[in-house]
Amino acid sequence: MTFRLDAPCDAFAARGEKGLGVRTYVTTDSREEVLQPGCFLRAAPILRTGDPIFSGIAPLPNPPPRLNRPQETRRALSMVAPMEPGQPISTRLVLDFGRPEDPSAAFTRKPTRPTRKSG
Picture 1 (cartoon, rainbow, N blue to C red):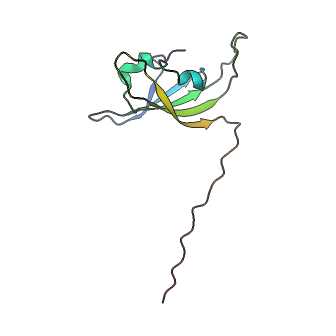
Picture 2 (picture 1 turned 30 degrees about the vertical axis):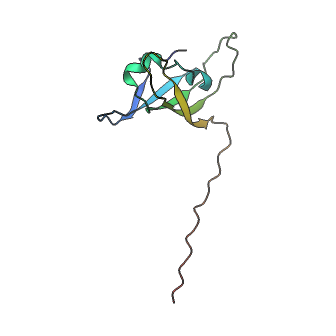
Picture 3 (picture 1 turned 90 degrees about the vertical axis):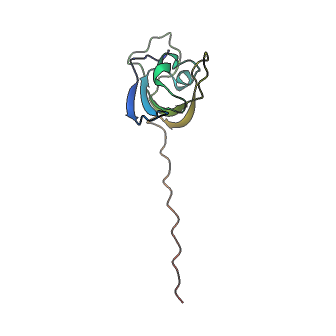
């Protein structure tokens, strides 16, 4: 499904000379569909190269039988790729936060600084 212009929200914005906006986007589309060139075509007026988009992918409440793909909840961060006039807007995946049922990542401890010996 193509991005709906009425769907994006500013997560926060720091508008300057070049502009920066962090967008949130909630969809029932798969991660692969969101990353397809042209998904954000209708959002061209509000997007800039380098803008991060935090996507919330949520399953349909009652998916039709013809929809032959797994329904999952997933969160991902993507970035708007360089925009060329007349070309579809593309994004690249920066970080896939995964699904709620995925295993947790292990916390790592910072190495401790060695104590200095006096003398």
